[in-house]
Image (spheres, rainbow, N blue to C red):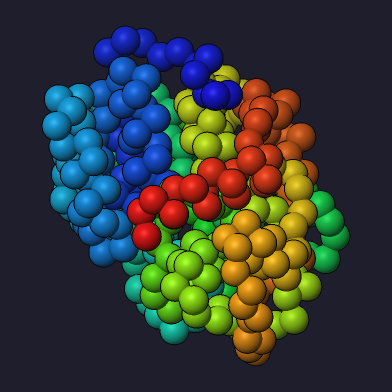
Length: 324
């Protein structure tokens, strides 16, 4: 693993917000496996209680049920913490268009509450989830930090605001903040159900059940699908990064480009099924193509992703075979 070489003080305490979610629970698992103390803060609105039960018997793990929209909850969760990995947010571009006020309160104000709590509690590093959606309609590939376009959804706006607030906390208060612009993360424990489920687990679940998945658009849209272990590495490398890299945002991906229609037929082949998809309308706010230039993260964070799409998708398929 690319992150096992990162070493923190033996008594280091990590707070993972959104730790009952997909990415958050993978972060908790990795940190506990490495022998560190982990607090998980989650209100279980999108995270799953069963993800907290995975670690309930580990004395180094503490689950706090609480909401990042509550400043007092954030402050209490940050007491005695060395590193904050802030993953708590509501995702989904289409849902954000339906619920703009909630997204502002949860994703922007919630992040601001966490930044303030981290500052007041003397946290060493504040690493937070941003998103490739901040590139908006900027047409050039690969996506490169500093070359962003017009934002296309409330969700993208919340992530861009988070980056600007984090920059202010580095500038004025000396809090080392690092924004990680995730590109289409997939892997174990990603929810395959619901209207806003991510495409890879949703396709796998439906194909295993003999259903016909819907592809929005013509399937020729491309993404930099990124296995979750690469994201875990990026978070831990950011916690160990120098202060000279703080106050910035970094693309976190593998640096590849996969077309949705190719992924679909690759999954049917891997799963041994012959099911044709249904093609539906394009989703509002979606961008057509996205892949990442990850050189900045390589140079400043020491990020070296070693999970290719092919390796990751095979691992994900095996996990869903066992758990669906």
